[in-house]
Image (cartoon, rainbow, N blue to C red; front, side, top):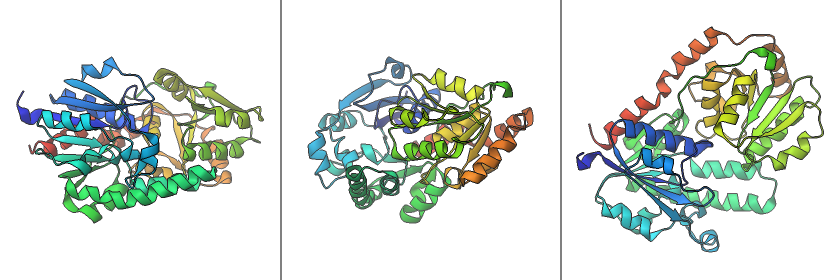
Length: 372
């Protein structure tokens, strides 16, 4: 294959299994680009997940790197999430094979502070990072974590000028595209989030319950789960809160007979819950791009109740029932439990979701990177 069809992808984490936000986008992007015949050199930072042979199916070579010292990273003027991924070996590997480079998020861009590359460099903007960290600070109850997030937000706002050095920026939502294009111009292109675009069978209403799922290490998800416990605690509805790590919420949920925590260890366990749930209530308190859980639920779940910050400026507003207050959520829940999820609902979703097909997003990205 010609050199122009080789690509370095630098991932902030090991993108398999694809079971939380950012790594879902990375993994299904790798898979879609591989299907177009691109030789991928994948570079992963290894810290909380084991190395994965599965990635070798889609990549010419996979490299793993340890993160840098936490202490040095915290006290650096460079944001922690970037300084923590400083690695000289990564720079050497990127220079050894001359090919375009795609950095996944600002997290992975430390090499740009140390050197320049002969090949074109691109950044996948997973968030407007300083907005994201400010939102985490607003959701965080722990004063020390709150201060860390605020300082990180300040550093990230200054660091964002690194975008001026790259050939292209791939935004992940229309909302963020508007922001980046206003600051960095035409080199910013909207590429919809990559995901598992398979419509799955839904199980009928007789197993109906309400599902909320998310990573409960994230302060915004913790805040959302606590809010939904308060919404449903005195109702007749059954609420299931699903996460791979729910210790922080399980004590609160245990106080109520109709609220349960489910530990999900595999993607299959989450898919089973999505099949069975009649309503998915998805709430966020910070508007950042598009939530992967929203797309995942649209493909595999039934009715969705979502608040403004979850669905505004996503192009998916008409596929969800909007509710922001406790009273509105309870009213929508009662209404949806009186309805059956029909084939019409499924077909309507399929039509709207055509623009989110990973194969089309990969072709668009390929045409930009390889100037086709």
